[in-house]
Length: 336
Image 1 (cartoon, helix red, strand yellow):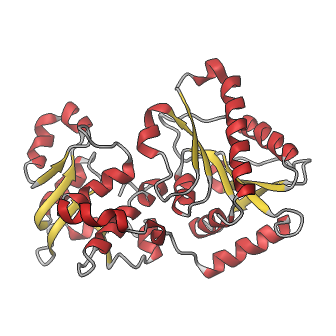
Image 2 (cartoon, rainbow, N blue to C red):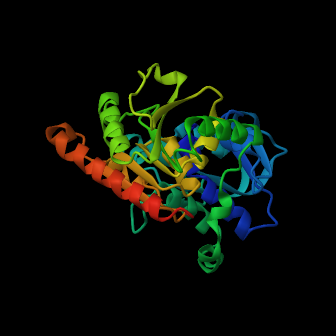
Image 3 (cartoon, rainbow, N blue to C red):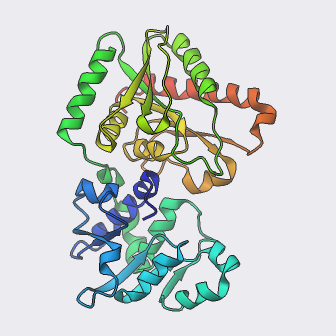
């Protein structure tokens, strides 16, 4: 696992499909450390979670099949080489092949199957992971995959977190003054190679939407790592949720929202997993890889080039229109 929330969330369909197609199998998930999101959730389709460093050179651990998801990392491939398995399946890394071909091919020879995503295959990260499962037995995969209900792969909630968020939203007015809540996620831990509005622009956009839809509660989500403090808003239906309880409360908040507006980040993948209607701001070159909508929910994106500032007003207005479309969808699909 790469370690990011989004990276882990997009692995869930792969893990769920594995257990659904091979329900008598024993599924071991290797993680970098026990802080991994999937190690703490105790998902029913994962039998065992181990730290990958502890498995290296362990002669007692033997597997029939090893799937390597993090394919751009030579250290991961080195560890995979040391793990005993009858079949090893990995996705081809174009970047490693181009930048260090001899060293990369040395490790690649140890794998029985190498999936090539650059030829007649989608670059979407969820589909790329599912392609690993397909290679175990393409016939079984082809016959069964369309019948799987991936909505059952939704992340579960902790009761304590769920109750805290219910109290929070009740205090903010949900259920009394406001029937629906739109969460706003302007922050991302890493914006390398991404695009995003600055925080002042996010505030202007949120204020415009809160004035236009006074019957809806809009909530910015903030956390300690941003080092940003919102000034009080004059609009009654524009608030801030400062998350002090970590990932569990974040999941509970996302699943309590009626819609999500945000930048490409783990928050968006949490919303996608829960089928919460979502509008995502993302860079054009990564749109195919990280776009949502896999679980069947409403997903819209505003894709922008790296030099979008040359036409910034155009993109700000485009975001507002897409946000209006999402809000109207939410209002017209209360049962969603």
